[in-house]
Image (cartoon, one colour):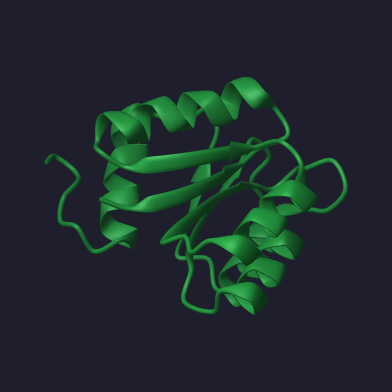
Length: 124
């Protein structure tokens, strides 16, 4: 399936996303630190990044900009518990394919990931 980078400042949230995606056959790499995630992206290719908006040193859109510089073809889904039109617009302008609101619904996450990766309806 796909190689997915998950970055969330709350480790439990990243682990939850990882568990859901692993059940669908994806390989996941979970990070809580932006620098570690970006460093890993310089060493290996990812099909998708799932990024929380609120991180420790940067916000998710800034991380997305760096990821796009390192891997221009990477797709991204942004996560936030505090949705605003401004953050949604910033995310889309930086190239995010989708924007999901926490708390995450398992089926919604699976479907969004499948759609972003072009893998159908997510029910596979």
